[in-house]
Image 1 (cartoon, one colour):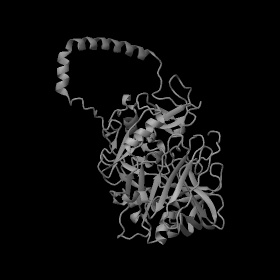
Image 2: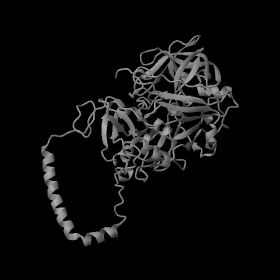
Image 3: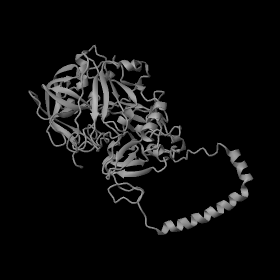
Image 4: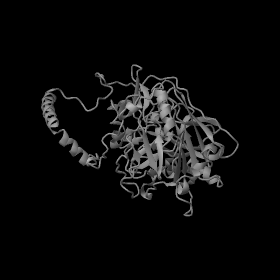
Length: 519
């Protein structure tokens, strides 16, 4: 869509000699451009290399692959040396487009594990999927198209193969994604299988939040999803945002609890429209605009607005760094612009099995442990159910200081900001949640004391409102928000691309149903 930039492709360095040793993840960016998954295959490398990558060896050749907990299959672009053809084909269908090709097998070296005859999809190389790149899906085996194509254990996912052939390795994976400052170009992270990072040994003592397990008829849509606490999103005003779940295919649950998916391959968290409104509409100067490069309506906000947000999961609070609620990019003229990455759900992120996608802009605030439990192929009834554990990595006071230093040049002006939550109602509740009657008696006393000037003021205001209404009725109409491809009127900005912190990737428009409709 945009001129190619010389993107620095990503790599991962392996450390240690243990079978479950951690691997470092890297994500580097050139001048920020948008990244999306392309309609024909993987990712759009013309803009920027997406996601957090590690190096794997497949058939003796090295590949740089994105780690993605939101899908389940391994694919690489280009011919794999010595690969064996299975005679089957597979297609990983996304909301827009698909990755498809013959299913082949080859020896895989992933972290310090060696897996013989690992099944994968051989995707034909293209401009946007050059030779040597790919994606490794780390989601549940039930969502694997390769497993379906081979109809048995020979098609098991990478993570299943690791756990099944290394029975002494605990069935969990952990991910730590970093968030540097605005100007940093290197995004690091670490991933482990079967062990936890020494700094976060306390994660195993955190609440085990059960995964919302789907019924067998729709298990192919299974994700690592959990229930947020009731009204479990705390907005900028410190009050809970009133929420109602629309995940009708998820297991029965309290309607005030949203179902949230953890996805390392999705940068901009997706939330219901009314949640995004509650987060951003109270920010002075905020505007909901149709950002074409971000696939839909997005809140454009001032770069110096500190927006505080907290998620409650399993009875624990997980604050979000303000640099993860207000991300920085540039417009077509190279001018700075910022936007709210907690985006109203784009069309590709609509799914009846969940309400929220917690992507990179949330995951950079936690250390995440995914326990696969009985998701592993061949598990017995004695195997425990899958669960998630988290440790917060964001200290609100330090995050505030970081925001002041980064965005406000060290001068704390946030006390003069009025970034309270917007209209705190959800799309299933027409009840106004303003508690205006809390101070009834005080309000009545004030009215009695100032009755005459208030009546005069109200009369004058009424006359002005009538004049304003008449003027509005006669003037030309304009849309509620303007597509940024249109000529920019005064005060509006036309974006060529938008990117966060300088700059994380855009959300994957095809996430909502990565294994195909009706599966």
